[in-house]
Length: 340
Ligand code: FUB
Image (cartoon, rainbow, N blue to C red; front, side, top):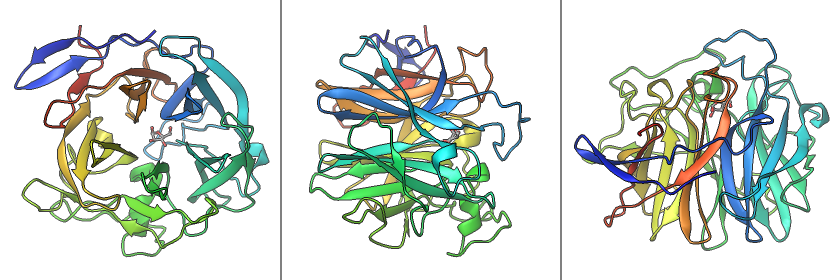
């Protein structure tokens, strides 16, 4: 079970170890954990990794997931409940393949599951499904959210009751096909010395099933105010957007993909711009790195995954959690998942 991190010094910046966290569950493979506290209980909305035999490639075809299982617990370190199948690809009318990283939100006693899925033309969109309870099962809408594209939705509820969806991911996530505003089936990336492909945000409509606006690009800036560049693989956005608020500041965190880090940038409103700050989580075992951040019973936690349980198989991952620590200036203490 997760333990409190212990501090250690490594190089110029402070790093904490993860507490050598164990997988939260071991009877199935789980990944991409989106954590929320509903009714004083911690719910985790993960991907459900399976071996489907599809060979590994840069599009991520080997991430061939077919359903979701929601996990929950009353206490950190306590019993973790797997609530069974919450949504299956077989029940989604517009489904092609690949249920990737989901998220969830609650509004007025209803629960909404948001999920990326390729349609029958192999193009990613984001779907919504509804339930009366946080663990599902969820009933999917007949069509994807109008105007949605790419993958990795994360829905943030602001203090004023407005909800925002952050989304997007490059490479297999197809976000690079929307440069210029319209869909281009060719993968077009900016040159290395131009601003990087930007994550997207859209305010949710009152019904929580549609966007209230056309998705907007999010600016990620260096501390000198210049855009993070496409060639800056250590800091540019790849996938796995997540937003949380700490002491009035919005923290936009994401995966750098091919450099395998979870990093973060901060801003003063949900739309950004966000200014790059640093690394939250160093690379984990396995190619992907994907996380969420939530406060539970007065403490902040990082939820993440790695491939330790499967002996390093990138598409067979396990969800873990560990405490997250802030410095007095609001910066986040970097976590090394394997520091002894
Ligand atoms: O789990 C499938 C994909 O891998 C997710 O959508 C990405 O964020 C990466 O973790």
